[in-house]
Image (tube, rainbow, N blue to C red; front, top):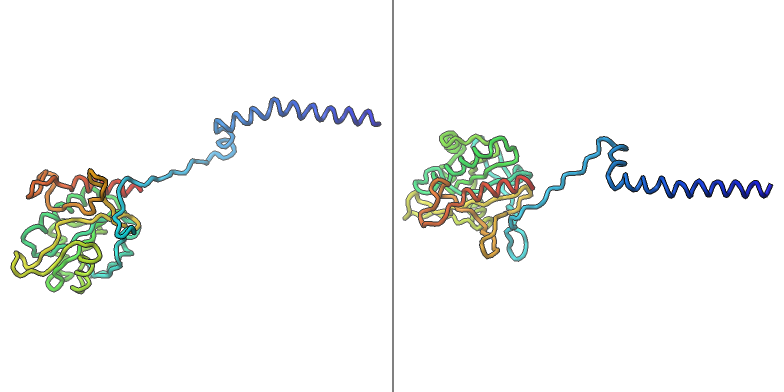
Length: 247
């Protein structure tokens, strides 16, 4: 009986040895070729990994700057807050409907950008009037129609003057002020701010590696340069919107 048991053990050991020599290397080969995973789960797909773009985060004291909370009324009479833009890439501007100088040029450029991104549900624009006493919901509605504003995520907003000016001057550092001695009675920045899907202010870097922070919004792509001979930045803005949409 003992000899028979010994032969059994030797036979089992021989089978294990053959399995190790022949079968295991074949399994390893198939795993390395990704055959096993594909056969065991035909629906398996490697997850798409989205990479961050090379656009910089605008920082203040080492902290990435986010859009402050806001709540205003848009051209359709709806209350719009910063939360309505969560998950969207959007542009911010300050303007007023009776502006005789830079606003028409800025908004024509924004309409051109709007048309370039038709069909993108996660792209929008936030326009704040700095003359809310005049720019009521009805006035903004007419303005939007006259300029061909059709993007449902483009809100032209009005509200309390103090809140709007605080948002412009403190929230974004985009200058806005009443000025009786200038055409139209108001002064404001002609720049746009670009916001990512998480509410952070983003921009490309200059030749020295510093964020440009804002994009000049007055000169169009066709004009090539602005009134000071500086290259237009609408084409750069469009390219950077695409980058953020892909993040």
